[in-house]
Length: 246
Image (tube, rainbow, N blue to C red; front, side):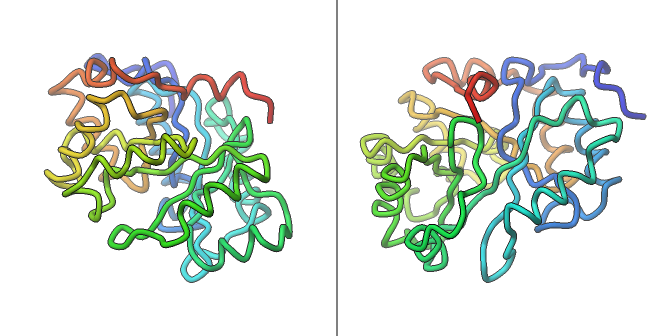
């Protein structure tokens, strides 16, 4: 069933190669529930041209109080399986809230990072974090490179997408969900994604895959459209993670 060489004959994501944002690790957040689920998603994403995966479960104290240790255990469930050649590592998607402020202030332990000390952060979809700029600054002071996850999905930017540009001025990188360009999350998310792509503001692209429905929509979308040209104004850094020191 699992064949990393069974590439889809339609438009693919081979140009991306690396998926740096997903919720495929089993039994740890709102993503895959079992190892079997994880292997199914990885097999289908591999068929779409992705061959390297960094996994980023939520760390959100009120809902998913994960730790680097619990994420490492979930990652271990996939090691030694037929998916082994695809497994590059794990990090986390941190919710920027009061718990995150406390974590940074106390410096209890290093954050779970992507290569190069990149840290994936997110906010509530409905209200901008009042401390987001401070969090970005604090991360940088501590030697981290923040990446804001899926800015196109925050509803408070839909009427003023230009507000997102300030994150680049602050030195924060931006990650787009590939499903946004297909309109999966809605027309406003698609419009905001186009705004960011047209201005060359996107640095990373992720599937943000949680479950089979996400993969199905990717497969269906890629049958209809080659999306690579949409990213031509952006310098996508996914593959650069392979050359970063950890």
